[in-house]
Amino acid sequence: MLLNALGRLPLPWLRALGAWIGQVLFVLARPRRKVALRNLELCFPDVPEARRRAWARASFEAFCQAFLDRGWLWSGSEALVRSRVKLTGAVQALDGETPTIIFAPHFYGMDAGGLALPLHTPREFTSIYATHPNAVLDAWFMAGRQRFGKVRMLNRADGVKPIIGSLRRGGLLYLLPDMDYGSTDSVFVPYFAVPDAATIPSLSRFARLGRAKVLALYSRMTPTGYEAELTAAWPDFPTEDPVADTARMNRELEAAIRTMPSQYYWVHRRFKTRPPGQKDVYF
Image (cartoon, rainbow, N blue to C red):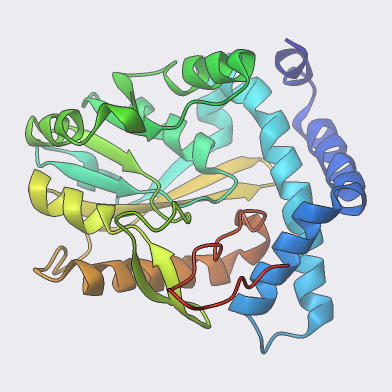
């Protein structure tokens, strides 16, 4: 596969290629550019437009760089991956058998972070995925994400039972609940300057059903690879109020995004689901 071959390039060369492709896409991919700019406008209305546009451009570059990086992440040697992907923070929180959920939002380094975790723990590791429409890419994604450790990929269609079962056996769940998945099961809670963002309360729900503690993993692209920072377990989470828990999840994510706004997945229509009677905020 071409991406695996490109993964053998020196990292600075690969990153330069990714940045160039990102700059081209920022110009040519007009619909996605408009979505990114609109998301940033909604979330950061007080930030000057020029800065938001610079964040959006840099986000396109980071997206392409991270996509090319999968070549070495998913086909390079274990030694290479270990040398370029650093797991930092509360790594000791992975020890033991306490059911644990890793809140892993959609920063472009999320695949690097997801690959680092099973390299640092022997525990069973579960992640939820949606099938990619391209069968070749879907197979590549599946193989790459399961190449180290005891990783089990569960399709969203598999339901809740195997997820909770894995947690109660003392496993880890890698959860990415920060996108807009539609109105079904969503609650409307604040997210940046948007007071009513449709958000699924699965983090609170799974933590409660699985009797699990929650850590966050924020994966940052660096000039030498990635740094995946693991937080300590969130205190007083979950509570008996899933809506309040979900609002807290968004606040935690906001704080992380502010440290690296150009590395978040802004091309997703995060606010496409509106409360009844409200207009589409996009086009």
